[in-house]
Amino acid sequence: MEHRLIRGIEQALGWDGPEGLGGAFARGSLTDTVLTERMLTPQRLLDMTMRRTLAHPQFRMFRDGEELHPRRYLHQEVSRRGQSVDMVDMRLLAGLLREGATMVLDQSNVFDPTMEVACRALQWWSREHVQANIYLTTNEAAGFRLHWDDHDVVIVQLAGEKEWEVRGISRPYPMYRDAARNDSPSEEIVWAGTMKTGDVMHIPRGHWHQATRNGRGSGQSLHMTLGFEKRTGVNWLSWLADWSRETEIFRHDLDRWGSVNEQKVQQRLLTEATVSLIGSRSPADFLASREQEVAPPRHVPYVDFFGPLTSVVCITNFPPRIVELGEAVEVVAARKKLTFAVKALPALRLLLSGRPVHIEEAASQVGAEVEQVAKILTEEELCAPLTAELLSGYTDLVTSATN
Picture 1 (cartoon, rainbow, N blue to C red):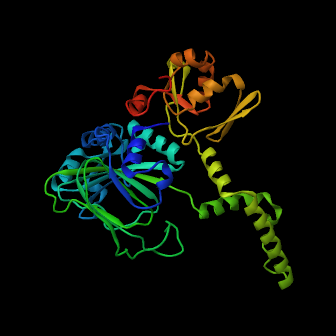
Picture 2: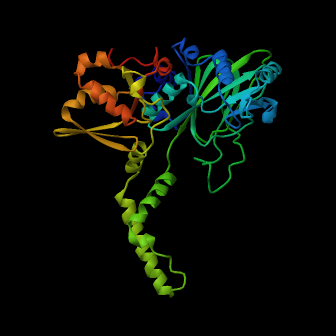
Picture 3: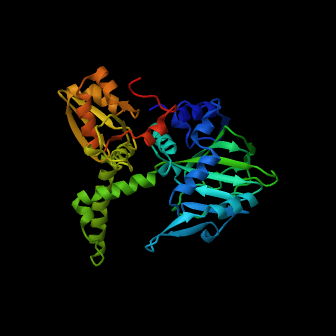
């Protein structure tokens, strides 16, 4: 699935694919100057904030590097029957933004179709889980204090300007759950300067960084942080531990009361079984399995009495695997394995391309069976109806599959 944001990031950072993620610090600028406004503007963010039910900690506010109590900007909307939900108090929010504050919305891709489609495209590109967090900073407010992230990030400055400082690592490849703390910032300054509208920056995991508008006067900054959750050897070992249940020796009770010799025998058997287990399933097997076992994301279901299925798009978190098996075709994705006749292959390739498919147009290209295949894929939740709202996330960013 080709997406304008991916092309822009690659060109800005000098990348030719996702291999640069987790490598060296990189910085550049988008040549597609209208892309930033197409992705998100401060006005669209505020409109999204007003119309959604948002709660702490997904929605947070900061001033001078300190998080504000949710009562400073959230209130409960109470219906006439006493039912209440958390909503952002837009008057309180406006006051904080006028004074100077940082507003944070995590996982904007849950609420906005443009962000949803962008993250899906980035997941197909990187083969990693991706989420888009949004940061709006006004006047001379500071953001988070100097910190490091346990994942790689790509930052896109969508509007305004912000001062950044990026430092080196103080612990190689730190993790959220780790064997040692990582509390002492590195003294090495990798880069310090101003991120302006259209600038892009890649900060690898573990690099210390902070951003602020201190001293910038009146104005604002809007940036998007794309977090890439890459897998490690620890994750592979955890996955192997689950597979160990297939082998009887791993299900035995550990011998607490046996003789020293009996305990040594058990240890030898466990060691031999562990070596065999490690050799039976590689890290590549783990990564492939992880992609195929991710459940379908939230989507609008297809219900036939609402109208015919006219347009669809593949919504799996990662590209479905299409395997030709002689007279049959197997599709593996989203915890499912579907088998089709080989004549469905052209329709499958089109429908599972990740690009919007208009069924009537597709039928003229790959045959009338595309309608039935589309219904099956939609019922199995590999595809979803292309609603007007979802289509807006693709418009001008991803070309139609039938073009």
